Amino acid sequence: MMIDLADEPSLNINHRTAGTPVLALQDVRKSFGSLTVLDGLSLAVYPGEVFGFLGRNGAGKSTAIRILMGILRCDAGHINVFGKSLHSDVVGIRQRIGYVAQEQNMYPWMTPKVLSRFVRGFYPRWDEKRYQKLMTDFELPPGRRIGTFSGGMKAKLALTLALSTRPQLLILDEPTAGMDPVARREFLDLVREQTMQDGATTFFSTHLIDEIEAVADRIGIVESGRTVYDGELDPLRNSIGTWSIAMQDYIPGSMPGEFSRQRLRVLKEGERQGRWVVSLQFSQEVLASHEILLAPGWRHDSMSLEDVFIAVVANA
Ligand SMILES: Nc1ncnc2c1ncn2[C@@H]1O[C@H](COP(=O)(O)OP(=O)(O)OP(=O)(O)O)[C@@H](O)[C@H]1O
Image (tube, rainbow, N blue to C red):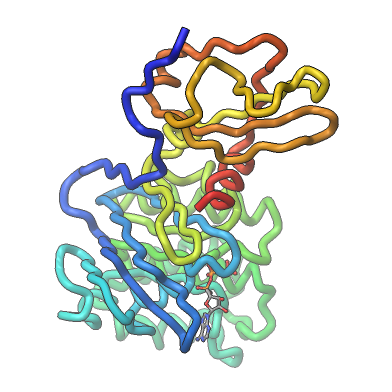
């Protein structure tokens, strides 16, 4: 039986339109000299969601975030935050954003206690009670010099600061780098809990797949400065499958089922441990219908989210 693929398979943008986006990037471009880092990046983040921004090292995540924070200017494209153009009111917009950078550059001679006195003046919504509570929850010593903190402690302090501004948008740039697994889980749980409490929106950059799985409602995958997927995790996971067959049974060019090569996307195929392995992406309708009839000798192999991510970025 031929399978009828109603839609062309694609990795295109599939927005869930839940109101006006809190954050919208459209065709954003940025180069450093001859190096193009953002090559038409587009994505939208909706109110109340945790959006995982996923990409390999060097994909352009931090550059995009630095542009969002007004630290860098893009060469072209449009950025809207809270429904208005970023450049119309960078300062006002920043006051409503909590930002945790990849590396913490805090004055090493300050203590958390002194730091809160220093920072609160910049943020009209500063919540000292919350600051104290989070410091206690994270077991951060209020009177110790920040220069003596470990990387994980600094990241927790940065999150504490960001959340104490009662942000409407929390932007986290690979915040758990350098944390042990227990601390990382604690950190992610807190992000989830606090943002749900406030109804805030979170934009979370990482290259760690398990973090995304733990917290994100939707994801954007960036590769070479372009969005290669923007949507929920399950449809992406469900649209990709891997099948394999023993090498001696493989007929070159054959497929694991009766479907035409033109109507699907071959993400990867090749020999691995004596088997011919094929990773394919289908239209979601076909997968939802469970109509894939395997040709003799083929078996369906399970795929982790990491496999899915690798398949997607390798073909971007
Ligand atoms: N100021 C700069 N001048 C020149 N090149 C830069 C600059 N900032 C970033 N780059 C380059 O831009 C590319 C993307 O870097 P970026 O830090 O945005 O990636 P990333 O996705 O955040 O990576 P990672 O996960 O490793 O942090 C890299 O090749 C980097 O070397």
